[in-house]
Length: 552
Image (cartoon, rainbow, N blue to C red; front, side, top):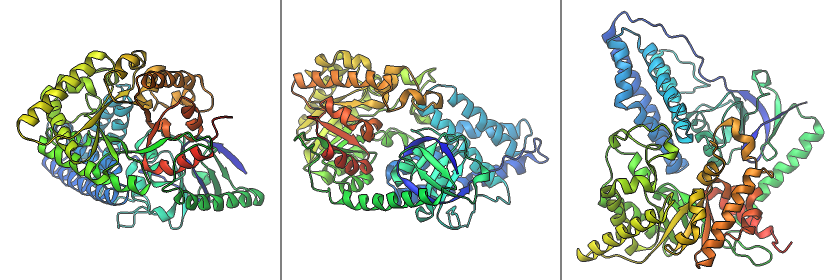
């Protein structure tokens, strides 16, 4: 028996045969073209084919997994239609005489290198997307592409249910798989916050990353994947198989037990009640939140409206989306975050300058205040939607009193303007995200001027430790088992909670850490009032909370 350790990004147990996913074999592209016009035609045909393939993945993801997952493939389509990138490829063909394959290879790798060099987690994922689209185009350019067990139906399926191993998986690899044939995923590379890891959690597929000992020689063997413990066992003995088969059955029974928790309070044994609300990316995800018995929406990410198109969305377009969300979940509260974009998340139409360190640049509330017309348009749409349900407005990355004051002034001006125009405006609550150490240090001043706090643990952790949370080399600093980094974070959370409570406002957690069961008790001991997590984490966390007794 061989034991290999990795980092768990999606919990669970899987038992079954191993299949090694070879991925696309890198073939050296011929450099020089015989006919430049023919190469340009080949490029356009390949691009059209790749776009159609990504559109198919988008539609399938939207139907089966929700808008949040589908956004990955919408971004891929935009990349395949990126004018600057395509121009760079065409120039290499037309002006330098390269083949379509060579031009795609060179231009896309140069773009990926630029993005990965920005030392930002979002841009790092974009670099991975660029490489994935490079592979899509290279596949389309080859007349005979073997793919991975490609059956022509849009799926890449093992012949029978299996645990799939690979150097890494792209999101499209996973979405093309039939869920009934996918037992688990293990990769040599990857990070906890990659698109693929998030997708695995959404699908409920056990997954390990950074498992260096796996290899192609494992193909065809039997394995036990214990993603809860971060271990995969190759060729387990009978005793281990029996033990894990028993655990697997209990796990299945546990899923049924979770369904029985619907309608019950998320309350500890000593009577501490926690609100369990959902993070969503669009109105299409409301059904998943409702199915998970969410007590409200703690975070509606509005930026997809700004990133999916070729222009800023109009007031009416935004109003219709926000109204749909608050109406669908009424009377429960829907908290909509104002546009959290900037040079770290942008599209071509924004024409934003490149920043050396986007994570520390013009993003979130800074971006909104630097673009007042765009911000007013969104605030007006939000205020109009407040007449149709229970709305909370959330301002991201507030780090100073002046940012909050300026935002409140604009909100007041927009409300007065709408009332003068005869537009109905309802009541709403105004909250801010605590995402920087600066916000923690002035939490008392901020709490006196808003209705609730939402602590964004992803950015707060990153800014506190001055570390990229997606960088593999940094993983040991983000270990949940007693690392000093969490001591610093929990201390800041406690400070923010106390400040909020001194001013009589509730404080919630919004971020990946809120869904980590190992941290649930620690967060509750910080006296937080609410956990806002992905819909799939709500019932497991409710079970965890109901088992806790904070008197001990």
